[in-house]
Image 1 (cartoon, helix red, strand yellow):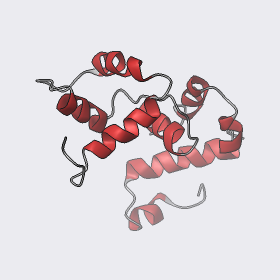
Image 2 (cartoon, helix red, strand yellow):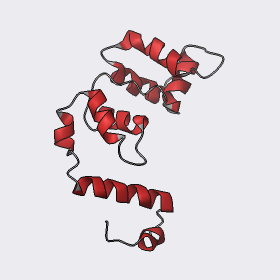
Image 3 (tube, one colour):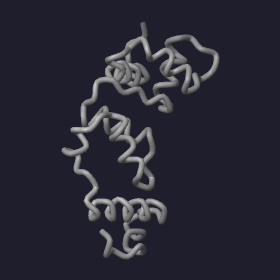
Image 4 (cartoon, helix red, strand yellow):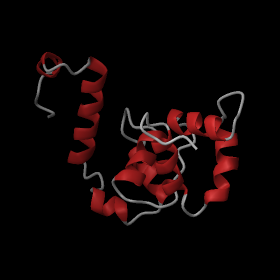
Length: 131
């Protein structure tokens, strides 16, 4: 990856910015960045701290990895638009809830906030049964 010219990546449809992000990730891997197995042994916040050192990886991306790849049971991505829209719908809120509101509502779901998120995302599916 590090030896691949940016123009080659661009010819594959990868934006210049994403090419920079991929290079940064490759450099981190070469510099002995923790493997997924090593990350799995860490607490959630430590994993987020490690992953957000990679350019282009923010808290949301790290939280999604925690839920879907590492199977962590108590993650609430408070910035996720789908979660916010589902809360607005199900709690009949006038406006999209902000991070603090999502966190406040989600506190009741501990220690299974990841599962609650899965249900909230599913509730937005066009095939979800209205109740």
